[in-house]
Length: 499
Image 1 (cartoon, rainbow, N blue to C red):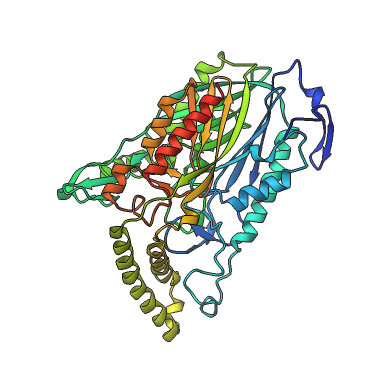
Image 2 (cartoon, rainbow, N blue to C red):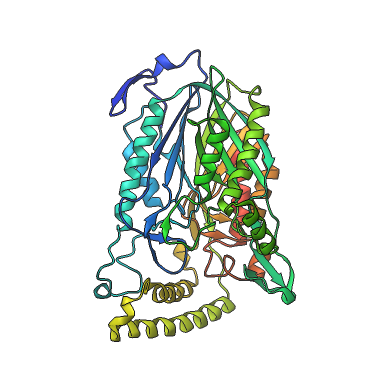
């Protein structure tokens, strides 16, 4: 789409703005907005094999929008969402709602990413509660995923327009520091078998991969020197409370509060999850020691993470307030990659068939008990075990040999240049080694990598697939190490094309 009508006046529910009246001698216009995307009804929570029905709201789910409008580089919109991933249905619904509301905006340049909270709503259509006949679910009513996607898409699109109307001349600064937030969650035994969590001390050989402790921050400033917002990039999914039955943004809720306490009540905070497919906020070693210290401090793990990120970002803001780029170049490219699907082996198929058979037997037994004995359905959360068995069965059954017509997986990636900074996205839970490979080859002074800007499949490395285990098995990933290597190269090429 060509950039046109840049002096046009637009009018909508958020007011009336004349584009050219805002721009002073070219340069960058910056706009922020935030919206509440908390489900208004109970929902199925996404993030475990078993179904969880939300029973309360602990804290709100938020979508935060940053709109950048450059005289020569056009308009780009970034949306950080307290969700588990971004399905194509949500992405496309937001873009469709914006197709004619903002002059000069190519809807493809609206980029959504998720924090990977495990206490947010199911986003994929389920036709009821998975694995349970409709006549057994009396009294359990939830907001259908399709309805939630429509609800969230409407609010997010309105927030993008609100950020557009709020944009003013400004500048950016950026920096990188460290804070211990995430840990590698996979360990390897002496025979080379990998496991996620649940360390067996006598069998532990080593932790499988690297731990990334960076905290990247991109600050926006108004022309009077006021800090208006910050993009915070950390390699850690938001799953401290991944097994709970409440709605929550997880540690990003406390992190927003901590940053506003330190840097200003009106600060906008846009979260990004850097490649962290093999990382998590949970420690797999020295757990007892860390939990003891939290008790002595009177803190939760979420608060500990928030203070670590808050302190790191505050330290960056202090030294970057005089390093503002008032005329950063903006360029944004969107590419559709065709990545090879993971190769399935005979061993993969045998493993999957055995797992599917085992879980099918468990599922059929639990279903039979629920049908024959009504008292089963009177127990609190009775649906947990049966839905876990059903989804485990279906997980194993998903392992199939790729057909010729679907030998590749189309994925959308973005590469953005903002001054000396690059921002590059992928839709996966990308293992940290792949992120490191992109970062060290990037020509940018600092590269913000953003995973979960899409459907959130795992993309493991070769050493991880060799060890197996959840996240790296054939049932966990559609794209394997070969596709990861191709993603790295094409992302690096895309970033370099902006330089």
